[in-house]
Length: 233
Image (tube, helix red, strand yellow):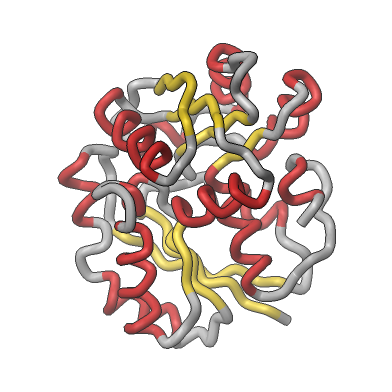
């Protein structure tokens, strides 16, 4: 039995059920919440303010790995910020760790993707920071659009159709993949459909977080129904 420790923003109501549905039965999930209600830069920055204390608490469940399952808090300050946060978690917990943003860049690299279309739940300011982070990481963003949302609870109430429709809208011929950003936005249920329709990989920030965690604990069995990334794990 393996254990994944997951940090989630306190108002996130989506990532846990999406993780549970995809994880193999012999891998369990153990979650800690970090306070956040608004997807705004000041609120996002405060999410990791006491990450060391929370990391020690989560590590006491004897988890094998810790994932910061929050997209914006792991790219907020640009290139390298995700690695800085990871190091803080690892030093405090003694456990290997990663973040959603780190996982996204690694997954794109593993798939050999260098040009993406970016869709997100965020407003223009936060979506712009996401775009800058990807481009600083060597990923060209050929088109980007957000839903303009700030209330994180409202994001969690959206159904899968919002991700389906935005992905179709942002797709461009020169985009090698679609990226859907925000772990509180329901995306997992439409990835397979979108890949079949668009003929290219679709990566969501919840999906890449699951992929990274499984990679770190040595799980290599294919997981079907959630796109190429997890199927070819």
